[in-house]
Length: 568
Image (cartoon, rainbow, N blue to C red):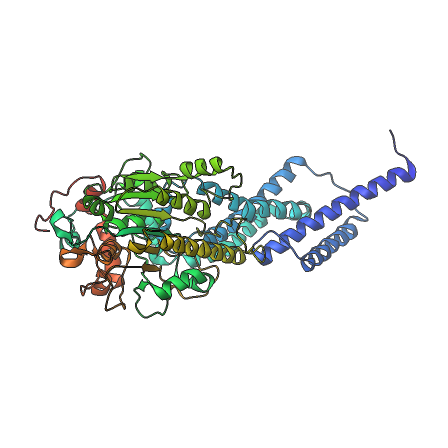
């Protein structure tokens, strides 16, 4: 069919109008992203985009009204588009990295990159494509027409475009480099480019680390059960969004320094999920600077096998130890670690999903792993079938994981809008209710009166708090001891994850000779913690020095250090 006359003109005008609207829409997304760093736009952004596009169309019309049209060269168009794409994507990617990763903390960033992340890789890839890739694509296509026409008309265009490229790249990446202090920059350089020096012995390890021996721990009664709940990123800046956890905090045994709602401090080697669990279990940091960490978790082998910890001690006293998490056992190498440290039965994502299939549950929460609600249901299933006289059950959650949490659509309260803060606030409220209900359920069971429940944040949220402006110096991970057998007279303490294992044991009624285990101290005792004795700066320095020592690297490889002080 061939169109002529008015029909052909009408079709042509409709096509031009269609592409004009599409262009304004793309430009609206670009304006919205510049304002909100998120892919949505309001009517005001659409007005701005329409004005900008209208001004360009008018300029282009006036400029070409009386001049001959020069055909566009396809190769030049593609090259200009690639130039624009990279020019926009490069600084935007650095801004995205600044907002997404704790780049100002080299220890935390490097440790995260070294861990097996499994499903979390796709979380970050999707977020990158949404926040950087789509934005760069839309904006580069929006600007292609005017920039190409400018490129054709400019004299010395290669020099001008190169200068613009450098200027935009430097200016656009400034927030990234501003966030990385000179000390952090040198840490990155040392880790990636500096060769390992000569091995050395650690005086800090010899002086401060206490190796467990069976005769060190005694107990008059070993029938008290333990349920340990690791809550992802639970910290005091979230307390106003977690009413059920706040109620547990007010009723339970807690330790803090100067804050009404406080807890433990993040420390080097205990600021990610697995490193905090290692520190809370055996009192030893998991340090990114050690020579053996490059293959961490890749082989599926255990590590620190020569350092007995909390569950090894409970196992020695006849406890049956259970563990359940909603991510694969390989995630963060949690499976290899706990199965070599006294855990009798380990359940992960595959086991929880079998339960869901058996129940006919078809919903799966978006994101890696399964929802916390399903994990807690599986924990109830384990507790319902226990036959052991005394047991420990460890549960880990994942829904509150950075950068924005994973919302479960089955939660009653929905996010108020599409912002990260609103989504995370809804995740916090839902997680709080589920943990509060789980604790209440445990207390109503026949074994509840004889069970201590520990609700602990594994570490701080790995970036700026999405729901609070609390200064970093005041942020603490929460530690709550519910129904402990023994309590403390002094609850104003400065502590880290290292102090968790001896404190849990002594709140359960065990007695530790000297009240010390690993690098930790029981907070029930009068002994001062390393943080109280050394201060944070000196302790961080000592821990970083420890990473290159002979003792630390031998212990990581499951070897007993040749220089171990047998008196400990």
